[in-house]
Image 1 (spheres, one colour):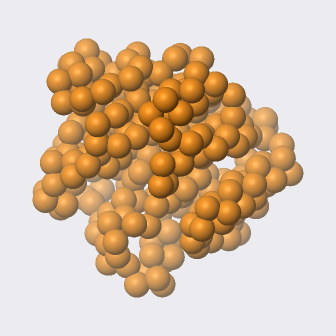
Image 2 (spheres, rainbow, N blue to C red):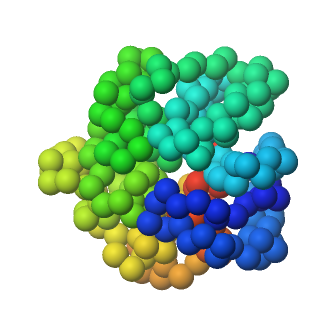
Image 3 (cartoon, one colour):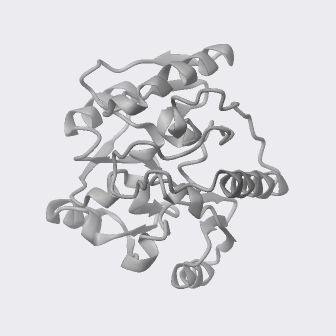
Length: 258
């Protein structure tokens, strides 16, 4: 996780962004609360200090790469505004003895924002920040099946804003975020595919962390929380809405290292 010392919105590269809208003190308190929730669950956290005012989105650790044990596939950011983040995280991974894999420059990739594990397979969202060919390249690197899904709504430019894989049988998704072919693909392969309500997916209902049958979820998604309870998962509600002003939520703030 990366501390939000310099988190703000001073450019606009997605529809969520509202320049000058962030309450920095409130954002810091919300982030500290999220850290406290993780620590209370016994989750070990490694922190990166945000000492780089030119990279306000550095706080979104999930976007920086895809980590598998001690190997990381570094991100190639689509927009110039975020490309400075790569060097900072590259240095961190190097200092912490990760094997670093870099994609060719024209293979855009934004880490855990665009890709999520589903059992032994991976879902990969493309259309706004990356291209379909990147999914094929990553499949070759990982030697795993990567399932590309085309995103068509600019509000859901990353997969983790519109799809949440609860386990190998259950996947939540917002149908309007995907083209018809991707929707049909999900219907064919997912045993229980559950649509998210529009008002809740716009409240980051898909942007969660799942650990040991507990799901840390953005506060205010009551229907989604009831569904989790019905599936015997415990929702832990927390408010990080200051970060939604830049297009991020709980999952975005969390880079998973295993």
